[in-house]
Length: 310
Ligand code: R5P
Image (cartoon, rainbow, N blue to C red):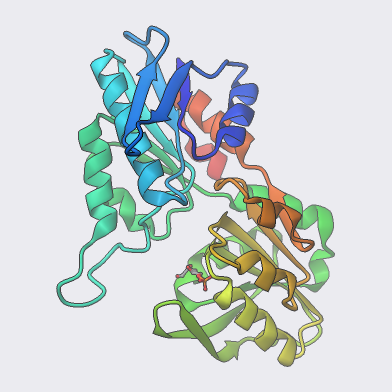
């Protein structure tokens, strides 16, 4: 087997390579003067089972094009099987027609990845699980919940913890974490009057005196979390932390989190942290390298990956 990476998250690729005790395959991914992407696989991959690790995070379009072009290069180099390992699948929030005459970009991206030559997809905490059905190739959607739960157990007194979903859409994800640690669940009734703006309407559940832990798949502007944290504290919560899989953290989100009432925000390394995120005093990283590495190893040896979700 071979492990190839684009430029989106080399540190994660290196950690996965270390877990697998496998060197990263030499692969040049560079730009022409007009920013077109050029890829050259610098090792023989004929007949190999190749895993391409690339998150389609910021800059989303460049990272997506790198993934597509790497897959195309591998296909034309006679790789036996190509698995696109996409820890953060960008465009996932465009998974339905949100209004008349709008695209379903998640489906388009799934088509592009398949057309580029991927035979399988391995991803993590898809924004909506049904996006798996947008691919007509086998797609494994891993959950970061087991990694988060281990960390929550190590750092919190579970007797006083209440798991909170920051919106109704995230209840299933939050309930999964709550049931693993035997905690109660509260729900924030969030509304989005327009894109990028969120408002808290109500808190469902009694959070008085509780250590509230918000669980979500994505933090982007930070608005959802910051508003939820304030509403929970106003409702009597003792303190509020958050565990979020994908730290998109665009623009000045990390500064907003630093200035917020959140005790701590924990994000995985599915997306490479910017220097601002890395230096934020209340943002901590949790690695999913061993989860991805184990899933890659099991895929390569045709073993079940479902036990990784337990
Ligand atoms: C929404 O359904 C997602 O799960 C996140 O809650 C959302 O993307 C977070 O965005 P922001 O941080 O910009 O409020």
